[in-house]
Length: 397
Ligand SMILES: *Cc1c(COP(=O)(O)O)cnc(C)c1O
Image (cartoon, rainbow, N blue to C red; front, side):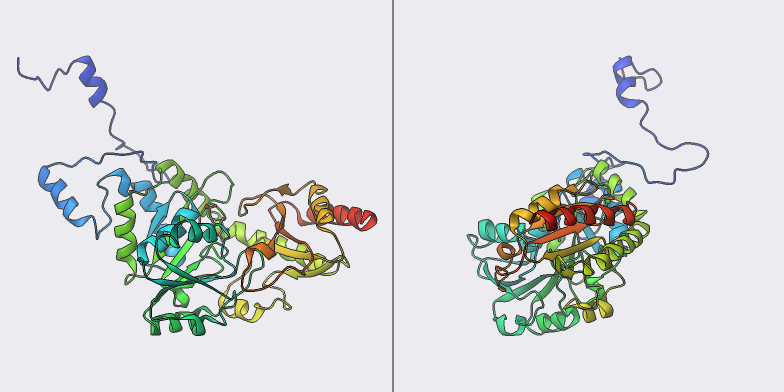
């Protein structure tokens, strides 16, 4: 009997029914979560046409190359970064790794700034070096980049402001230098989140963000983004497709939801962090406060020139206090969670080992350094909490 399209049997009805999201009435504010491996086409010709264009154009052809929910997030990130296009990665670290995989080949040389996100050094040691990439770490302020360039240098990779101490480099000057030597400039823009800082607008070719931090903003999802200029785009797209790296629509949705309040949250993180930073500068037990918005910060002039604000991150050095007392100070806080990440709505504190995180500068003689992520709690409560715990270590040494 031929198939009667007017009377499909139960199993067929179960498979074929309920697949449309087209409805009468209004439309949702938010884009749908499109969970998809397979994309369907009307004809073979349509499928073949999509396949012929997908390596250079953004088309939904298969889940491993992204999904419509992810594309919506890519558009938001491209807008924040002022870039051509964006790719999404399962973590910030995976995004960073892809930059090195896409733009370097065995025999190439790369300059990496001393203040980069620490796990990048582990990636460099365990993958890049055995793979035949030559690495030179350069000073966090970029002052020795010119003298470290070689004819084989293909990439200059910086983080600005830097992890832990927020060092700044002169990005437009580094871009000019890199381009003059035929190299690309990439920057980790997790600190600036595309709001406080925009590396591509300052001359970089590639900008990476851990969307895990402020873009998501709620400590409940991991993601990384890479945005480039049009000229730098193709190697990233090609290598990402070759490796089948994509993120789930659910994760993309969570980050997209976070981006809606990014500007409002950052403004509050900044305000609260500045309250805490100013209070810290008045404390005798605090030797130095690291926050680029403070006039005494070494990179303050560059911050004023290139950034539109600061965020919830501050670090400070304790004077005349042992490492154990610094641990006790953090343990004694009640409103600050003890954790390594940041960028969520909540306050965090951790003692950081700057000496082991830097190889171009010697931090071994500095006192213990505490990093705070100042969250959305009332800053008066946060300051009382800090004062209480600082008082306890001052009394007990
Ligand atoms: C957290 C972080 C990353 C890595 O992001 P993950 O999503 O945790 O892998 C990269 N760069 C900076 C500056 C970070 O703070």
